Amino acid sequence: MAFKKTHTPARSLDKQGLHRRNIHNQGYDFSRLIEVMPELSGYTRDNGYGRVSIDFADPKAVKCLNRAILLADYHVLDWDIPDGALCPPIPGRVDYIHYLADLLQVNGKPLTGCNIKALDIGTGANGVYPLLGNSCYGWQFVATDIAQDSLANVAHIIERNPPMSHAISLRLQRDKQAIFTGIIQAGEMFEVSMCNPPFHESKQAAAQAASRKTSNLGRAKKQKSATALNFGGQDNELWCPGGELTFLTTMIKESLAFSHQCLWFTSLVSKGDNLAPCRKLLMEQGVADIQVIPMEQGNKLTRVIAWSYLAANHRQKWLKLKQQQPKFAHSPSLGI
Image (cartoon, rainbow, N blue to C red; front, side, top):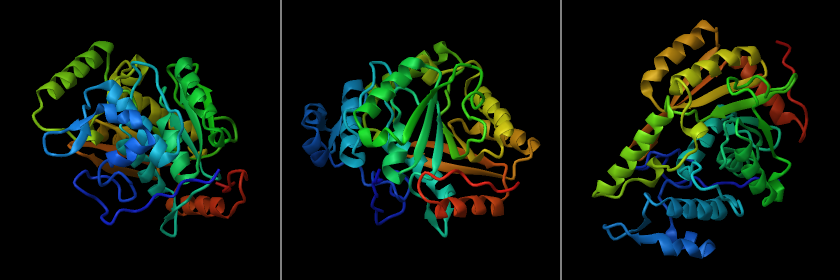
């Protein structure tokens, strides 16, 4: 499949703080989006400042906007999610992809094409990371989830987009206590893994946070940044026992067993206080490199934590070999 090349805005970062390659840096062009999806016009309104927007507290409006963006900018047809499933803000999600591409550079250029294989932990019913990563960079993806229904919905989206059928594969994680175990197969190699972990520690905490968000939106006098919001979410998408830190701890500990099968392990970290214990654990496990990448999306600040067990020279050797290989070649053997 030919991957979609994205243009680079004139400024590397605008007031929304998005990655320099993020085509949403200048906001949404609703006229163009309505051209590809006329039903979006039924959700648009004046935001009170003479600009067209939507009500970001309306899940149907947000879903329609996502469908239009994915069609217009990433050529994804018929994207849809079940009622109540997490409806992610596309600009913020594609930002994560662009920052991962920065980790996979040779001579200052991100590697593209099907030789690059990525692992998406907890893809959800939306499957947005594989869809965006394949569209932007042509990468192959293995997308995992503990919910069969979520994977079934992603499979339906892929069926509607035949060019992606050879690039995105789905795997059910049968052990809800495991992350990489049972997913990464013997001899299988990935250039990068990614994850947007559950944030809350209980269903009650997730429900209270959702209630506060809805209340805040209702009281807001100013239109909030579209990149800072997302709505909905099923239980496994929003919470797990112990919350984000427990999930990250499990992920880090498990990564050691697959230390030479993945070039970069990464995850979003929503709570800044969780970085220090993650760094401490990674250092105890003897990783070769830890990077924390800030991601600014409107008024929201999150970050990506990335770690590798391979030294920088071995990482560059790996990537250069991938760059030189023909399509669908096996991952490199580094002799380490």
